[in-house]
Length: 164
Ligand code: ADP
Image 1 (cartoon, rainbow, N blue to C red):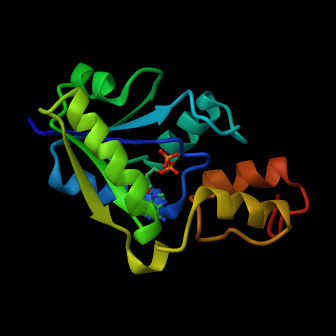
Image 2 (tube, protein in one colour):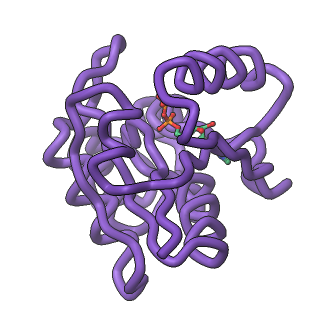
């Protein structure tokens, strides 16, 4: 059984993240989405809220689980007997950070491979922070995020276009 971890902050999950998770779930037998609890930046949503939105967005994907983790990524991967960590790559600007993380994780555990999935062109410009900024300044995030996230953003930013 080939298991992959797809880690991230998912604050909130976007259509770009979903695309990466879906594609990882085609290649691997099982995918565990790791929602990182502790991240350097302040999050808009709590870890529990972020996890609940990921779960809802992944409804019907039977080989994908979602879990909050608060440990080193390699430890989380070992706990799940994962062979790989899958990350999405958008532009060259993602590369430096991802390269550093992959090398560090290899240093910590050489048995866990980091693999990259290229962002689909239609989501290559999409990020959680852009989505939050659009919502905050009353724009529409329709299609950029799953419906559950659109509803959650509308609750945080009542002036958002299409907000309920
Ligand atoms: P982190 O804070 O760990 O970077 P994110 O939740 O922002 O977590 O992103 C998780 C992963 O998803 C990263 O590998 C990131 O490059 C990737 N990702 C984010 N947005 C997109 C997108 N629009 N298309 C493809 N991959 C993406």
